Amino acid sequence: MSRHLKTINAPRSWPVKRKSKFWIARPNPGPHTLKESLPLSVIFTDLLSYTKSVREVRKILNQKVVLVNGRVRQERKFSMGVFDVLEFPENEAYRLLYNRRGKFYLEEVKKEEKDIVPYKVVDKTILKKGKVQLNFSNGDNIITDKKDIKTGDSVLLAEKKVKDVLKFEKGAQIYLTGGKHIGLVGKMDKIEDKKVFFTKGKEKFETLKKYALVIGKDKPIITIKDE
Image (cartoon, rainbow, N blue to C red; front, side):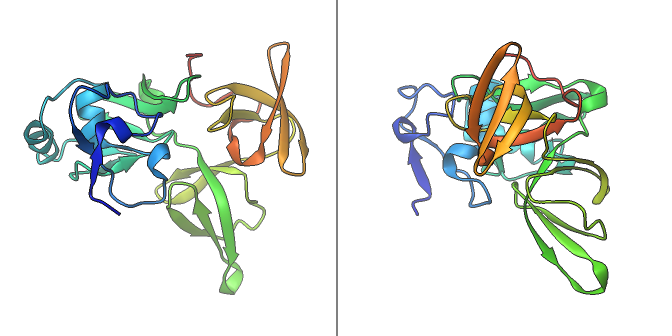
């Protein structure tokens, strides 16, 4: 894989001006596909307009003041995915989301929500001594003794331990991370094989299970505007 990426070939999910520059940062290899991730360098230059050059991006990151999901990040090509939270020490925080056109945007995060990141369980492995390894869509994993957590559930963490579980079930609030309804929030009505049927207001929709990410029980636990 080439280390370089022409701006004109950037994924459609990236909100960049394709004729503004010839090259754009390619994110480091990680759990997300190219279209599902956005490097910090692009976030600083194109979404926040904090910098105009790679040199300026590096200068900020080298100060160790940029956090992603509570961890200091210094690599300009580090990739953020949907729901990840970008935080600065001045109590400034943003969540990476999709708008209804399928493009990334930053939603300013309330102080009480900056530590809330729903992690979707994509796989689980039974270990010895009654332990279970949960693997999340962002590439992270934890070991827990909570065996009732299933693939598709969303997990809230606190210090690498399970704080709460949002079950993938009828009545749950879901956020769509792909498909023609990307960026939509709705209430899950029915699960049928690989499909999910959900309601938003008075309208009914269907999508694939893989696109549905649980973000709440009776109501969303994070603020998401209708873009």
